[in-house]
Image (cartoon, rainbow, N blue to C red; front, side, top):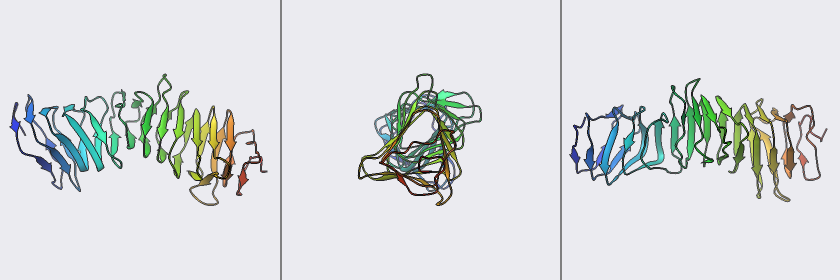
Length: 287
């Protein structure tokens, strides 16, 4: 614990194996040093709001910094490739950079709030059953997006969501009239989700994999396109076990190689000369 208006000159490293707490009584900590979380187990948690006149950085290199719904102020914070920042969403935080491989985990269980407008790498939504976390603007998640619990909402502004890695949803996604675009390579979509606009287009051969036995519903535009000579393959996570799709609106499907798909909509998916039937497809025009 630090008393108010303390001055720190040396670098500080949290590397214990258990839970460690950053706590102070009140006031501002003056620090011209670098603080590092480098823990292979346990986590560092805030025990109070933390205001620092700070010219160095907070670097979560390995392990977890947990805010416990307290605000904090440093000059900058960097979450490293093996680092995780856990927050509720209502906190005020410093400028934060997420390195490739890093994770932001929202764990608030109370009042609904808005995600920080940050360029995320891995994003985990783990709110309470009645907690809604809203997009702050059009948002890019460069790596994986997991909705473990609670609701992720694109809001009445219908903000777009770009995902570069895998999609996993066992909570709730409120798509409203927004567009979800899958921008990466060899992506996998698991869980059961209702999308409004679903977009996956590629210019190089790629595979989009869907959870076996799980249903993806698209209420407006379903856009899955490869290009001539570079098909987009649509596959199941379990070979021979169908993945389900319910495209209720406009379909734009071309230059695809389709296998193990069950179209649960009453209208078959139209087939054109650019598409390959790789077998075990139901209610596609291959029938």
